[in-house]
Amino acid sequence: MSEKITQLKNKFVEIYGGSTNDLRVFASPGRVNLIGEHIDYCGGYVFPAALTLDSTVIARPRKDRNIRLAATDLPDRVTASLDNLEEGKSLRWGNYQLGVADELQKAGYKLTGVDMLFHDMVPLGSGLSSSAAIELATAVTLATLGNEAHGITKPLDMVELAVIGQRTEHNYCGVNCGIMDQFASAMGKKDHAILLDCGSLKYKYTPLKLNGYKIVLGNTKKKRGLGESKYNERVQEVGEGLRILKQFLPEKVHLCDVTIKEFEQYKDKIENEVIRRRVQHVVYENVRVLESFDALENGDLIKFGNLLKEAHASIRDLYEVTGFELDTMVEEAAKVEGVIGARMTGAGFGGCTVNIVREDKVETFIRQVGENYRAKTGITPEFYVSEIGDGARELK
Ligand code: GLA
Image 1 (cartoon, protein in one colour):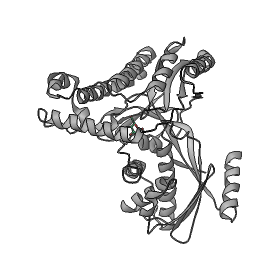
Image 2 (cartoon, protein in one colour):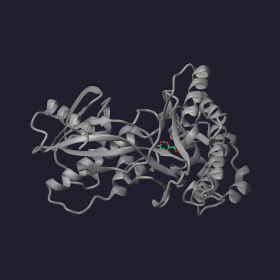
Image 3 (cartoon, helix red, strand yellow):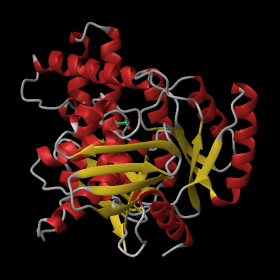
Image 4 (cartoon, helix red, strand yellow):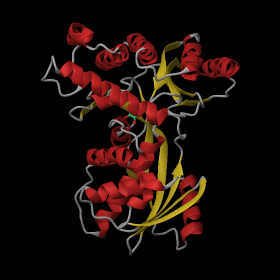
């Protein structure tokens, strides 16, 4: 066990008492989405990969039905009963965890009381899915310990746990998100990206072969502000787009079932120009994801990079979820030699960019983009050279 885990275990004992001998350790990562933005809730393809930045949980099962929560970076302490979890909805911190417990039980999981200490390495509100990391770390902890306490030996269904995480966002956090973040956090695989069809939940892994290039994440440090309500507004807008197109294409279940040809044929039926642009982004972005997958499989990194650039322009101009900070960071990235693609990643309205940077230019990239971004926005950004890691798991 690493030194960090030993420290966390000692911290757990400081808070909850007992010894470190019976402690269990679980972790679940944040993610970067390479391409396929704001289309998971339209049944589209997305292309995320799990990061090596985790939400880690030190846990010890209890004999009763209480859940106790603590975190290394917050003073908050929460105690709740598994028989009265709805109360958790109003918590400033702890609502994700109690929401996951509630949704697990509603899905038929048998749980047991647990003491938990959270240590979050995914920067909060950065568009790297810190919330999905917490949800899946909680889900894998509670489901594993609950099954053990009840003598259930079947392996965990990680896709089901991802869906439970998504339900928690809907019912406990008020975000009508798609499945991408929870799926990536649950199902991530070291050095692989996941091509996920969000309509069917069929997926395949592909090795992230970026010969000579690195994925660099640029954190704009712009707080998301009204992100949640704008997010739900977009979900509603594309729902309206689907409703209109279904009058002409009744067999379509999801907006991403609409092809480019069909969109071009029927787009004038969408009278509201804003909704038409939202739908245009969704339909074209879905195709870009498949093209990106092929480009990576064929080792055509230049094509892959160009698709990322197109995706940014689309999410900026048609979907309008970027903003000055994200756009500035992407523009500055494009000026650096050795950068073959850059775009925002995640929900937008702040958060991170993903950049494909030639290895020998990474330092220059961080310095130059950092300086120029700071000069234009007054904000000091952060950069992470990202490694691709595994999904939710117990650390043994
Ligand atoms: C957030 C949501 C995801 C997805 C992205 C945008 O991360 O949680 O479901 O919609 O935004 O692609």
